[in-house]
Structures are given as structure tokens and as C-alpha cells.
Image (cartoon, rainbow, N blue to C red; front, side, top):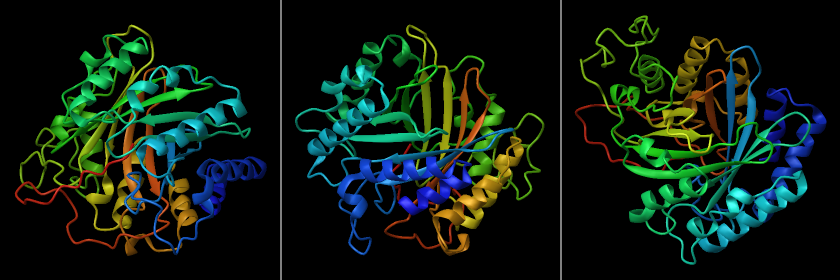
Length: 386
């Protein structure tokens, strides 16, 4: 993982000294699992990735600049049980706060909500580091709304938002099937966000187009067009999209006239809140689990390249990033590119993010079924990450 991080830092344009510092940081945060031989099985079935590697990389692209590298990791991945996992994660975050001089007040205010004595759910705490020049990252934490039971997750999210000064925020969220994460920006952020991630079963391009609640946010047609390309529902050259970003059938699948839903792994949305007391989100993100709707990573990469070029972004760093993570051909597996995301935040340029799996333990073989199918019953997988 450290070698992968070093190579990805180079792709992202970080200096040699910054790259080495970040590699050491990852080894420290991951603790004993960083030294664990990869011929052993994963320490536990981490929800963070398909092969249970407790780490995932991502590259965030904006037009006119190089990509930003981020690492999502599970500090407590080798702990015995979720309760200890959470305690280890909290200690790791607080150690970062002491090291880099930021406070954890917002996290402390939520500790009783997300770290009960007997937690439930798929995770306790994840931490994301945005690796910036200078060797000091920006830090985010991801918390589990279902820690006290899935049936209480909505109430947990509502109370967390209220405590953080966003009393009207819960009412602004769109309909969803589950509350997946609450995420907090900690440290040196110009506008620290609290983000709520939602799961949408059977999400389609038309439904996705209506999920943003931010003022001045993306057009529904742009959301729909991103969905269709990421999920493999466009024609190969994207010519089925009109000037408004909707296909000739108004956002329907051009092949069969159906608004085809994601029938395996669900789509996700993220809704970001910044100003205390604001009624509406200041950010919206759509996440498409491209690995479940492509035959192999060659297809997933082609879609990512199309999306990056469409938004005026250079896809070359993504191509280099895949080579930095693995020596295998993209056509020899599926899952190296896990998600593609379209990110809108008020006052900032549009971003496209590609989530890159470490594949430390396993490579998923190519599959025969490439895209969502409206008429087949396919067993649903519920695992999903940020």
C-alpha cells in the first residue's frame, strides 16, 4: 500500500519529500495491518472495499489543474469487533489532530451518537486524507448512522445535523432507502462541511436528475447524462445526448425506451451543508458504482475518460494512476475503478472523482453482464463506499 501511495503521489504531482511523508503517515495510521503479509487473509471483512482491503485511493479532477489524491482508510481495521474498531479510529483521528494542530470539537459532540457501547452496522469510523503539497493533509471522518440500529439511523442523522447547527438540513434531504454515512471535515477547511450520504435502490437516470437540493446546483440533464455514461447506457460515442444533456428520449435508455435502473449495487448521493442554519445543501454528489456495470476495467476506464474529457479535464493522470496501482491489464479484471462521481459544491468548479481500489487481496474477474437490465432479476449487493 505504501508503494502504491508513493507512485500515486507522483501521478498527482506531489514532491518526493511530500510523497515519502504521506507514505509514512499511512503506515502509522494503519498500524499493525500495514505490516501484515498479503498472503494472509484480510484481518476482517472490511466494508471499505470489495476484497476487504481497508484502504481505497481516489483522484479528484477539476478543469485546468492536476488531480488531487485522496486516501480513505479504516484505522481500526485490525481491532476485535466494532466497538474497539471505533475506539482505535477515534484515537487515530485525535493523534492526527495533535500532530497537525486542529481540533476535533465537532466529532466530540457526536461521539455518543455514533459510538454506542454495542454498535451495529458495517463500520465504526473511516478517515480520509486529502494529500496536499506541504505534507499536511486535509482530514475527513466517516461515521455510521446505523451504529444504534438501522431503524434509528434517520433519527441519528437528524440529531447529528441539529447538534452541528443544521437544524433544518434533515428536511432538505431527498427520499432515499438508507442513510449510509455522515461525514465531517476536520481541520483547515475554508468551509467545513457536514455531509450525508444516501443509498438509492433501483436508481435510474431520470430519478437521479431530481435528487439535488442545492441552490444553483447542477442541471438535471447534466446529472442524467453523467449517470448514463458511467453506467454504460450511452452509445459508445455519446452521440445519443442532446444539448441539454438528456438523450433523444428525454433521459431514457436509447436502446429500448426504458429508464433503466441500477439493478445490482445501488447508486449513492451525498448532500453537503456548510452554513449553520441554512435550509438547503451547498453541495451535491452523485456516485455510480461503475464496477458493477462494466464487463472489465477497460470499459470502466473508457467511461471515465469520456466523462473527464466532457468536463474539460485531462484523463492522462487516471491512466497513469491505474498503472501505478497494478501491473495487470484493465481487461483482466473489474473493480480497479470502483466508483465514478460527479461533484458540485457552491462556489467551486465541478469535479469528477474516480475511486481506485488497492486490490491488495483479490482481483475480481471480468464478467459477462455489462450494464443494468430492466427485465432481469439480479441479486443485489448492498456493499457501497463513499
